[in-house]
Length: 334
Image (tube, rainbow, N blue to C red):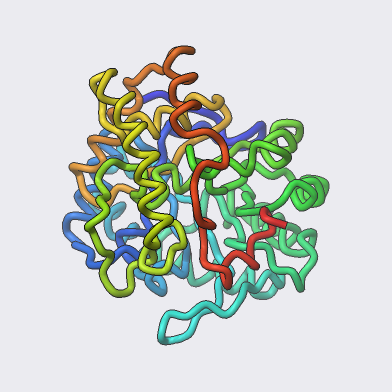
């Protein structure tokens, strides 16, 4: 397994991380035993970074990861790095009601996460969305106190804009920014990525397959199940979907010429964007994990990259990456 640093101040981690959200929520039915087997397979393959959120399945995802780590061989368990997002406010129906970045809330959220995970510390801790009612300095300062106390190893951010990155980095060392980045989500390239690089902040890229849209496994006939995020995602809606899958058709031609899958091509493209970028793959099964890991063996030369750029140029996708009511919470889009 290749490794990459999480910024100038963070740990070295596997070049690919495992995003565990889909094992608990937002993508339809899940299989607990297969989820745990997939986490074990990832650890066995050398994947060290496990990403979760305390609100994924209302704590279910943290409990799942805790169980997977308890039942994994000690040598693998000790290498695991856990990244946790916090702050989302939800109700019993699963609706979102904003984010809470107050220092007291930060400490409260972490206490519950440590209990569910069955550990005494979190390796990277970050608010899931910047709380507009709380200065980022206060939220980051509270996490910095938890670092001093040994409950957190490193501070991260999620979906933060360039100016927020600067303010946060002036408060405490920030190891990485978790943000959506893929062939069809390239908004960070204008200001956020250059700012992160200037400040020595790494990128953990989620949505590298755009929730399966550019995986090569989605079809025009497929309909997401009730409760699946993709049923309300603008990019999966009618004319938008047809257009976006047309981009995938062009990407497929390049993948077939190289003898690899569409998903591997899309993941390899993110890997090619810099050693400071660690893609998170949301594999829910061992089969999908194996495919994703194959991207590490894919080399994209200048000709390949130029062909991909022609097939899927910046801004080519149709539809926002979240519904309007969720887009307003993205500091990165302001």
